[in-house]
Every structure is written in C-alpha cells, then in structure tokens.
Length: 225
Length: 303
Image (cartoon, rainbow over all chains, first blue to last red):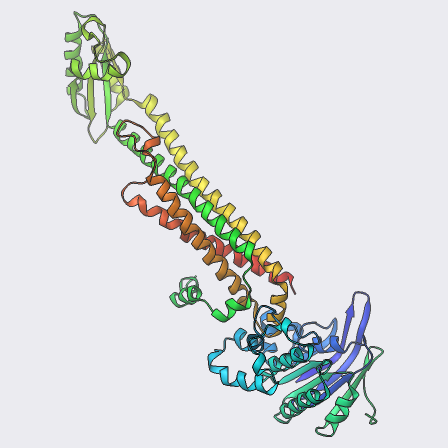
C-alpha cells in the first residue's frame, strides 16, 4: 500500500531523511515516533504526496508518486485521510462544511451524505457545534473535526500527525478507538506521535508496529513500548 | 473544441457548483474591480462599435452613391453656352455606360449655390457654368475616354466624376471604421489584462484555501473552475450593465436631421442594433480565458 525504497528527502543542502526502505501493507497499524524535528511530519507528507522524495522510489497504491501529475496526486489523496497537526480548515466555512469538504471536492452530493455527516459529528462530539466557524472552536474541537474530515471518505489509509496533541485523555481514547475500529475494517493507519500512553493503549487493542525516526533513518522500536 | 460548446458543460458552468462556490470566499475588492472594469470597457466598446458601424455605413454610402454619378461642367461665353451644352449632350448620349444625362435647371443650380450666396442671388448676372448631371449605367463609365471626346468636341466642357474627393473621403471613412474595430480589440485586451490582475490577486489571497482544497483531494481543474466561473459571471454582469448604459447614451445622442452630417449620424441602424449584444458575451469569453490562464499559471506555481 505504501512502499518506500531507498527514499531520501532533502531541504536545500541538508538531508532530513535518507535510505528509507519501508513497507506499510494494507491493514497495518503503525506509530511513528522520534524527537521533534526528526522528520515524522515530513515522512507523513511524503506518504500523501505533499512532498516528493528527492531520491529513491515511493509507491502509493502501486503507483510511483513521482510519475503522477497533480491530478493524479489529487486522486490518490481521496483514498488517504490526513489529520494535520495544524488542522488546516477553511475559516469562512462552518465546521460541518469543512468536514464535508473531501466529499464536496470529489463531486459527492452533501445532501445524500447528510446522515453520514451527522453521525460523524455526533461521534466526535461536535453535533452542537456544526455551524460554528473553525476559529470559534477550541484546539480539541478542531482536532476532532480534523479527524472527522479525515475519515468521512472512508479512506484506505489514515495518516495522523500528533492527533491527540490537543485532546484530553478521554477524547484521546475515543479517537484511538475509532482508529482501531477503522484498522479492523482493513484500513492502514499511521500515527506520528510523542504520546507513549497512546501507543501503549493501542498495543493492548491492536497489533501495532512502532517505528522510530532518528539520525535520518527509521528503526523498529524496542518491545519495551 | 466540441467540448467547449457542449451544452451540458455550458449549462453546468452557468448553474455552477454551490458547494465549490462556497469553498472559495468572495474577495471584495477584486469582485468590485472586475464588475467596474467590465462595465466601463463595455460602455466604451459600445461607442467604438457605434463609430465603426457608422463610419462603415458612411464609407459604403459615399462609395456607392458617388460612384454612380458624375457631372459635366460647361464654361463658355454666353453666346456659345447653348450650343456647347447641346454638343455635350450629344456626346453623352452616344457614350456607352451612361444611363441618363440631364441639364440642371437654373432653379437647381441656384439651390446648389444657395448655401454660399444666399437665396436672392441674381444668377443671370453671374457667369455661372452650366451643369449636366450624368447617371452611370451598371456597366460603368470610361471616364478617361469621355474626357478625351469632350476635349475634342466640346472645348468648354470638363468632366468631374467626383473621384478626386470621393476617394479620400471613402478612404477616411474606411480608416475610421477600422480604427473603431481596432479600438474594440484594444478595449477587450485591456479588459483581459485587468481581469487577469484581479484574478491573480484573488488567487494569491486564497492561497490557503487552495492548499486546503488540494490536501483533501481537489483537482486543480475543480479549484480553477470556482474562480473562473465567478470572474466570468462578474464580467458578464458588468459588461451587460455597461452595454445597456452605452446603448442608452447612443440613443440619447442629439439627432441632427438629414443635413447634420456624420456626428449626428453616429449610432446604429436596423439590424446593427443587435451588435452591442455581442459585447457582454465577448467580455464573458475574455474573462473566461484570462481567469483560466491566470488560475492555471498560479496553481502550477503553488506546487
């Protein structure tokens, strides 16, 4: 599903990631850990085509991302749900419309997906905040809305960048539960996080691999996690 | 090309996608700039069109009317005037390409001179030449051959086929008509440039919107269409308003009657009143092309 073969990524003269060879098969559950600035977010960006590798080959759904044009990348992203660290909303649209944006841009009728949208809003606890604008939401509410937007298209891959950064423990567990449920449905889940508690909780529910990024390389983390 | 005129595509474009429209927030000043620029340019285009159509009409009229007539002027001593007039008529009657030749009466000659000398001019007291009006047949007249015959048989006769002043007048009117059309091209070029500026500003102001839409899987064509549709409809609306105001201004131009000349004749006649309707459609087309190009360029740069 996601395959990296000798992938490197450089900013200017400095190499941030190098010699990455990694396979994230369909239905797998991975955590990405590592110190700040190690390249967790960069690796996630490579995985949804926002950044292109400066060397090596990265294949998403059996397609080399460097061979795709912008429309091809856009098509791929419809199968990948992303929870961004900074959420990335359109501030002039109510949060319900923001959550429905992936449906909108892929030509789905919002009217026919209304039930699905309401259910999702209820699940992330934002039913009463549906008409609020993103700047009116708290950090936690925005994070939950970002998760709802990431899963509304029922994507094959879910990438989450510090998804519990602004959530309390209870909401973190609810979010994890959803991600685990999605994984049990066959979705591939990759979460970049510093939250060791989240990783431990996940390992009790699902077979998760923990990858640690350090010194520009990815290593399988120890069993102590 | 077939896709461009696909009726479903055009209908879809006009109806639009309400959700896509909402995703891109309206940018106040670019909206106002586009509508204003389109309205002003359409207003000017109506005048350029009126000028062009009128000058074209005038050029055609001068060319046609004057080409069909000529004049023989006979200057001779009073005692020989009658004989030379008859000799000239005899020459004209046997010249191919002349449908009719008629000696102008004193009254008609007086009327021709009236604008310069007034109505009470004593025509008998002045050595006025005798004029013979010639109407050409469809086959046309060989003016040079006729001149030579008149020179030999009627020494006091001079043929004036109006070409000396008809040609520069018709050429001037033709040039004026061309300038009118060229002005229209310039007006639409300026409109395109202004809409491109406004579209660039709108795209730059919405860089974050574009980023977010791309992150959730929007194709560039989808993002561009939201901008293109908006700018096209704004230009169409502005140009329609400008066109209506321009036509009203042309209608309100003071009428000068039959003798007032070119300026009071500026405007449209008959079917040419339909020409201004093309202006908003052209403005829409220009806006569509300009915004499409601007969006494609900006989206390519925003990798």
